[in-house]
Image (tube, rainbow, N blue to C red; front, side, top):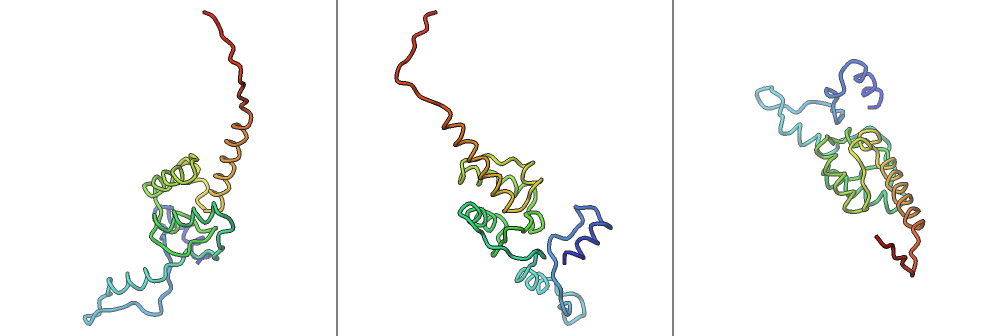
Length: 152
């Protein structure tokens, strides 16, 4: 699949590349010899492959991201190296993902970051980095008991 995707990538613009790849022994046909599109869609939906080896989530952040992606993309068994856009994601779904990430993790991930690194592993690293930066900045703020009065 990755070889086919690379070859097609050289021949076609990105927007024309297939989101899913499925090898079939035979196209399902109707009695009149035409392709049975409904049966074809069912066969493809049953086992869509991204062509990337499955890697399970390794931490809580990645596990939560998998749940977000599964909900948005309506798919199961999403791996750490799967590409959001190869699995059927697009700009509107990326916006939904950014909003869910903000709600779940209390961190802003921009659409630019999603388009630049559309894998769970990379987005998880970005979330961890932003959370760490937030916590370290929060620790730098020191509260004092005394308040200085400044007269105007």
